[in-house]
Image (tube, rainbow, N blue to C red):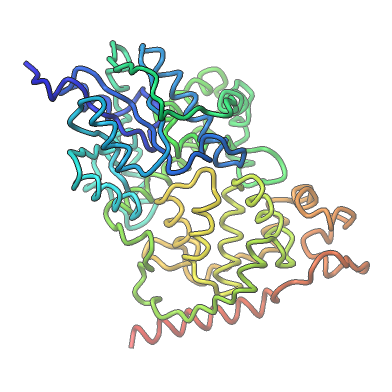
Length: 452
């Protein structure tokens, strides 16, 4: 028989905006009669703002509220300092314990430590990811070995509570609760366009690196917010293949891309210092130049390299860019401008609508060549060649860099070679060959000094 203290539990919803496939619900219901879902933002702008990150947050929250409502419950939405708000909610609901997904980044870990000192907080492992089913046995030395092991792990059954009654505690209207400004439904449209019988998934394996046409699902913000679980994605892909078997190869490649998220999550779990520390000890002595003007021109899309500049301008406007573009601009910042990878990582962290600590830090270290799992340090993207490959006709560049709208396709990725001057567009911030030779020398020297 449950004691009075076990009657109600607080579910602190952070990056798991869903009821289905949620291990927090499973754990909380084993010990408590009712569950109170609580969402806390540190600023009211998350609920009222019209910037890309706020809009995604609002849509994710709106969908979550609707899902909880189907089970007869309501979500308590607050803005303020999380520890204070949780303490107030615990007192007002006469609850004794808070459940939440286990954090992975340093900021959240510090917040959880403070919470544990104030009240009973139980961090729950996110079992919706494949890697979390056996984190100690998965090899993380390189992606290929990880992927081979990852594929053999079954997804497992959907969370059983999704098929039975979930008891959420409905509260009286809370005077401190915050109203949501925008309730868009872009998720349904994105899922339909990608997973439809002849949707974008059809040619994904062939076109996934193109940025001039829509080739990806753009579901990553809803994966990061936990609106979608891996089971949701795998089921949708499977259903698409059943209706259109020609999608089979693309579905496999889509799974492989999902595995990268798990790969970096598994590494961060085993090596939490990946978030802020260069993991390759031989490169700790890299003399980063970190010129403020170079960094500023990179952020503002004024480097003189069209594919880099168009990507950075889209990022500042939409909070999202294609994964191929993320690699191109990251390589340029680190390998051309010799700016510390952490500065780029932190800019992405503050800008991306789909920011994920493990994926962000892992991908930056991978492209910078600063970790044991990275691409070789001598892999340096040529921004002109990369532009031609992913934007062959220059339509993407022309959309985001209107100064080049009249440049012929042949010169769109190297406008400095066109005979007509483009006065409104800057010349290259640095020559590619010069930058490449400088970086190779610096990285090679650092490795040689460490070896000796």
